[in-house]
Each structure stands twice: as C-alpha cells, then as structure tokens.
Length: 478
Image (cartoon, rainbow, N blue to C red; front, top):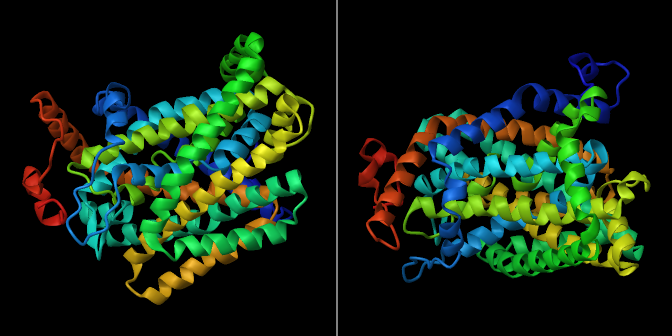
C-alpha cells in the first residue's frame, strides 16, 4: 500500500484519489486487524461453530416457520435466500476479477481465509439480531441498530449505524450493482448503460414497493437458479482444464505467501485486496445480513446464526471460487488489460466461446438485481428504526431503487467501488465493536442450543427467561 495521510489531503489530488487514499488507510491501519481479530476470537469462543455444525446448518434450510394465523413472517430459507442474494452479486463476478487484477492469484487465498474466519462473526451478529428483534405489524424487524440500542443502550451509536448502513447498502452498493449490470449488458449486447439503468430501476421499484414478503419470494426463486447454474458452468470449465488445475492451486498458494511478492512489496497489496473484496462479497461482520436474519420466524436465535454462517460459505467458498477458477484457468487476466466484469466475460469467452459474455451478462443481471432488492431492504429496516414516517420510507425507496440505480449506470467503475470501500470500512468498524461487547449472549445461546441437541431435542427452543439479566430488553421470546 502506498497511501498515506498526506495523500488524503494533497492539494492537487482528485476526488477519486482522495477517496482511494482514505479507504486504503482505514483498511490498512485499523479495520483489517479488528476484522481478523474478531473472527479468530469468535471462532475460539464458539468452539469452531462454523466447522463443527455444518451438518446442522444444512438441515436448518428446511426449518419450518412458527407463524401464527394472520401473520406473514418469512422462513429460515427465505431469510437465507435474501441474505445470499445480497452477498452473491457484483462481488462474486466483478469483485473477484478486480482482486485478481490488483493482487494476483494470491488474493484468492485471502478471500477464502476471511470467509473461514469471518463466518463465526456472521454467526454471532445474526444470533444477536434474532435475540433482540422486534415485532412490526405482520413481520419481525431487527439488526445491529436494534441490538446496539437494546443490548448496549447506546442510542447515538444505534442511530449512527442505521445511517451508515442505509448509505452503504441502499445507496453506495446499489450503484455498484447497477454499474456492473449495465457494463455487462453493454459488453455482451451493446445496450446503452442509460437505457439499461432505466429498465433496472423500474424493475427494482416494482419489487421493493411490495415489502419484505415480495423481496423474499423473488430472492427465493432467483438465488437457487443463479447459484446452481453458475456453479455447473464453473465445474464444466474446471473439467475442461483439469490438467492445469494443480498449477492454478499452486499459483494461489505461492501468490499468497510468495517470496517474489514479499521482495517486490506487493504481498501487502495481495492480502489487502483479497480481504477487502472478500468482505465486500460475503459481508461477514459487516452488520448487513443480521437485518434480514432478524425477520425469520424460528424457535431459537441460534438457528439463524447458523444459517447466516452457511451463507458466508456459499458466497465465498462456492461462488467466488467459481469466478476465480474461470479467470485463472483462462489466463487472460495477465494479457487482456481488462478489469471488473469485463475481465470475467473475456475469461469465459476464452473458455467456451462467444456464448461466454452472454452467459455472464445474464448471470450478472440475476446476481446484481437480487442484490439491489436485498440491499434496499437493509436500508428499509434501518429507516424504520430512525423514523416511523411512511413518507421517509417512500423517499428512500425512490432514491435506493430508482435514482441511485440510474447514477450507477453511468458512473465510472473506480468511483463507485472506492465509495463503497470507505462506507464499508466505517460500517464494519461500528458493528464489530457492538458484537464484541454483546458476543457473550450469543455464546450462551449457543451453549443452550448445543445442550438441547445433546438431550435429543431435534428442534431446540428459547425463551427470554433463560437470560434473566436482560429479559426486560427482549421483546419476541416470551
């Protein structure tokens, strides 16, 4: 990393350069240590929950709801689908390509590592979201703003998080998703980014005005189709190049720890790029997935913690790896001079011919569109936290799914990615501090869940009298 504090305040620096410098400094000196430290701490305190309970995670995908008559809560699988919809998006297709372009093959290893470690953070934050969720008309609502307010009793910090996540996901990240959709469609079909932006904005508005139930239904259809289809394509590419796969794996390991990278001063860039793009993709510890995890109707908070930990694995170890192998097996990242989604399309074209860019364009539309509507909901949950006024929510809907989507269609790739990095850093730091302070409750809930499973109880249950010291702050677990 070459950024310094003088770079940030350079008199002749452009806006884009300043944003990039701020992002690099925040990540390099503050957030990465906190992110990895939290992941290691939570992994240890939960006794490696993300590895020991994988079978239970998969089983819970079919967990039924406990909805009372007249209520419209969403199921565990629907909550999983919405969270994966936001995770599996631009970061998996364009973000992985950017990481490899900047940091080389070694950055893929650091993406894998941050997923393995960070999934424990995802477990803790989503368990807390379930514990402190609130009833809202015919659904539940919750997330970091709610557990900061109820668990830590810091109203100012809860409000700060609500503002940050609304800006980060509902605005900044949605411009990134839109930018990638329009870039892919222009590359494959020559469609004007402006017109593609108009169509994307219209469809987004159509879905988001239907609320979380419509968002959940759309996501539960799109996510399985796009994830399975993309995985099958990647497997086909790997089989076609099975002879050079060992060399690719060796490149990833050597690039992550290689002497050449260390001597050339690029090892830090490889690590930081992989970690940044990994977190942008899987969102572990960032405080986003808990907003939808809180909406699920389950019998025990730990169930959604496990579901969201599985979501991190699905995103990074499955979908991100698919993109990485497609790009590395083609080798075009070394010669094409391309970046982002254009590199992914070019790599696939090199492997399967002219149908490659078309397939990626269609895939990215599904990935990114599902992310737009999921990102929107993260903002909605926090707008509801900040104000009960429906007019404020409607204004947010127009901005998030309409105006911002149009902006992203015509903005430059560097600007939207760098704004996203800065917002993500501030947001993650705020949430990580909160879950460090409140993590003890998630650990106790996990102990309770494991104890019930050992007793032969197939579907563990929770009531707030098991946490008497904070029972007055728990609303939904009578």
